[in-house]
Length: 191
Image 1: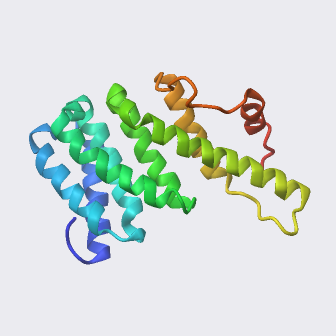
Image 2: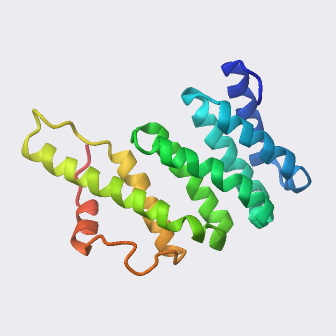
């Protein structure tokens, strides 16, 4: 995974993800080494291979599950994922969706440990959903001059919000969407 060749990186991440998904035994005894390797990958991988890196990280988190909840492991995992979250969600493209999928796996498996990140996740997801709805409204009013928004990104944002709500991570006042806006999300017409 640490090879400089992008093709080797992609193949190694895919192989590791497949191994994680196929294995019934957790990689708990290898967690420190795997997290250290993933940390190096997060520092060095360029945009093209971020997709497979997120998939690989997601598969690893799902494999080791609750074993990852120890502070020493979270102190490695959270900073690397959240740095990407801050950097790559600004662009709001397909990479944002892959990153949201990775974060959803973390929320699923890490439960209460994600509480510390909930304000950042919810705020960013809320902004993405709100901006998408505004762009959709502007596109409907003026389709020639306003591009159609990427609804997949909006869906990913709503999944993060839904997951946060179902895990009871919302702190009073954190989610300030009025209910009509949430209903607007459901009323978006198919493309």
